Image (cartoon, rainbow, N blue to C red; front, top):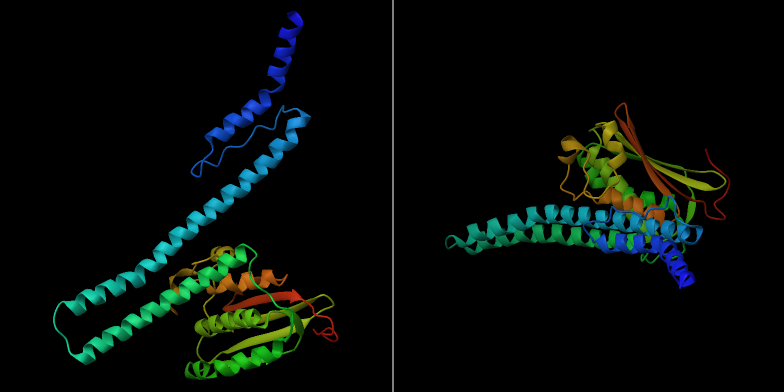
Length: 293
């Protein structure tokens, strides 16, 4: 009898860490993921389990927070075009109008629908990037060729603003041509949007023995230092002064960073003394040629 009692006490004490794990798990929910399992004093048999579960909880909490923030941002961004559509429709229905007036209202509606469609497409792209589901082909991409093609595409816009586009250097990378072109297009259009009239947007391509570097630089309003850590976050606009230059949803730079990361690279920004430079780094493709400054 005594032996049985001692055995039960030993088992009860030995299972105490598992009971604490169970109690903590029961308290967890989507709204309360901040609790962690106690690792201090846990026996070796349970310690690794507690560490693994705590790591899982940290990842879950981070994912839920990103989802919560993303949902709030989506609701905020969609509210404006939907509100515009509702207001315009209510005004249109307030009295009888001519065919031409209805045509103008429908054209205005179309602009808002296109804005919503672009936003949804961008959000879908980012969601696929987050889950590693972006299809990526392994093409040989000559960055200088893509840069010149995009410079030609934006030539009319640049000329209208009195802005030049200068391209130097060349390098080859392996990746998805359409995605890389999209990233470069976003960076170039962003630079043109914020460049001061009469200045030049510089696209410089260089490579060393392992990396290819493409920089897009423009002279214009400096991004505040406190804004730089958040410049690649979704729906972020670096202050009202820069936000007034366009009606984008603030997803372009987030997409650029996702494309860079999908290709094993990175995207950084530096802004000081009236010049802003975005630096896209990608792994060097075999056969790129000699390193360039």
